[in-house]
Length: 88
Image (cartoon, rainbow, N blue to C red):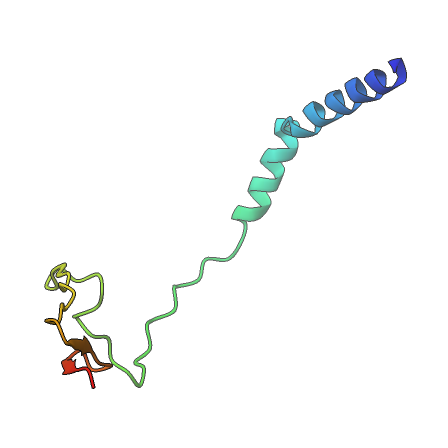
């Protein structure tokens, strides 16, 4: 059982060491390499076949309206169109 705890402790130490950041010099070099990319202008938006609509889901012109469920009177049931029909 002692061997298990020795391996568990070594594994824990290994996980802690792996989680620590690499030395700051290596990180600075990596950041400098990333920043050396040539600056390019962002691509312009192209006109698509379908123009953007202003009444999208995120627009403020729409309101949150929750439709009330339809309740039919006795002797009638709701059909697939949402109308009340007589039961036959």
